[in-house]
Length: 223
Image (tube, rainbow, N blue to C red; front, top):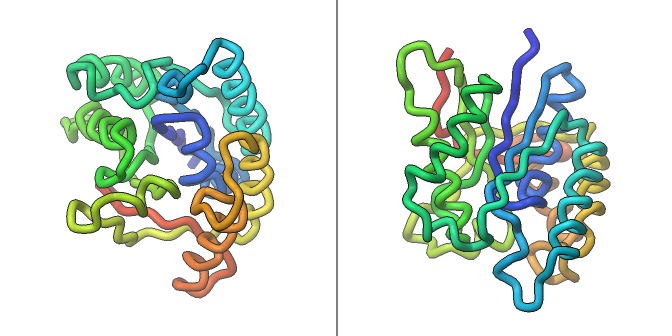
């Protein structure tokens, strides 16, 4: 059965960092994948302008083509300021998309991330996907994003994965998609470097006996 998969990410590049290989695997298996980006990703930066936003969105479109995502949806909320809106306003923007697409599986951020947009995005997904009778959402998974998940206060809500997706056959696709975001990547030994992402997916894979994997926290599943 073909499934509809929705990635709800705070910023462009989070989708590839968190679950790029998993996206590519869903597409390879015949599923339809959409991505929603909550914030613009650049407006919090000093000297950022319209060209910066257009360049970042262009990178997201290149990554979309590499991964096979059917459509990117940009909500364009201000970067690193999602907490300045009443949560209900953020939820309502997302709810209309979820109602239209009716996804079976949703991937989003971990609630314990350092980045405030990540945390608000997680809250918005959980609120928009309240388990009401007749809900079409069968599973919600939280991914890790380097330079946010591992930088959070460890006693708050650590990322302890319990769901792994073998992306051994999709590793090159994930790394190619990350290459589209070259301006957002950093030089090693930064945790958001191509080298470290490669180490991470191999580490996650080796912990479950495969070459490469992406790890998730299961938020909710219904069978």
